[in-house]
Every structure is written in structure tokens, then in C-alpha cells.
Image (cartoon, rainbow, N blue to C red):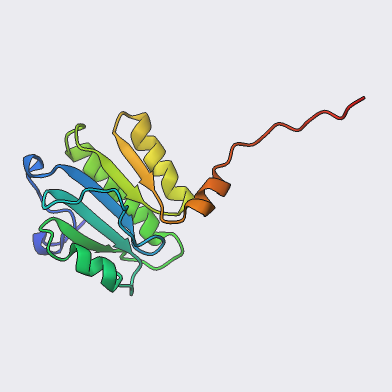
Amino acid sequence: MLMPPAAENPVPHIASSSIDSVLLIDGDNDPHLPGDFSITERTLVRVFVRMGAKMPRGLERRLSALPNCVTVISPKTGSNAADFVMAMHAGILHATLPMSLPFTIVTNDKSLSVTAQELQRVGRQTTLWTSHPERSSRRRAPVKPAEKPAG
């Protein structure tokens, strides 16, 4: 398999000692920053978008000065193409960065919440955040057992 030149590689080698946290943003589904997230020059940021899309301007303005911010464009089209790329990058970063670095995943996509759950399961401190709390709370509401009729 041919690898892209280093200049085109969206996950360049970064000294893990220069990173204090990882922020992965689903740019197609929930292109926002968590209000309580402390973003610094040492935050590794990846914004994932589908082919032909761009990072929203407001988000781009807030992130443009960060040295470790990259927009990752899915090389294929399709309804979940950028989600698969985001999940793959989460795995690559998890495998290459120290376990002490916390991950925050910003999405309103149910399938990407599985990625966050798996990172947590294997011991990575991971926060799943969405700017759509009303949707996520409805979706994640516990299922109540059916009540037995009185009789």
C-alpha cells in the first residue's frame, strides 16, 4: 500500500510531551467546542469532515492559531465515511499517545459514541460531548421495564 507523503499525512509525528489533551470534532455532525473545554496550544485537535466540506468559519476562527489543529477530510464520499475516518484516527492516536492524555470526542452521532465507549473500556479517559443535549438525553434515556397490569 502506498503511503501519502509526510506533508499530506493528517497524523504527523508529534512529540507526546508537547500534548496535554486530544479533541476530536465531528465537523459534519456537531462542529462546536465544548463550553467548559480548556483548549490550549498543547491541545491536539482534529476536525473531521466529508469530502467537499470545509470546517465551519466560526470554528475555524477559534482554532486557527493552534499549532496542533488539522482538518481531516474523508477521502471517500458516503453517509458514514468521515465517521469511519474519525474512528480510525481515534484508534491511531490512542495507540500512539500516552494513556495519561484525556480524549474529548464532540459528536451527536450515535455510532461515534461507541468509539468513545470503547476507548473508556480499554482505560482511556474519554469524554463524549454534544451541543445537542436534548437529543442525546432522549436517545440515551434508560429503558424502563414494562409494568405488569394490575390483576
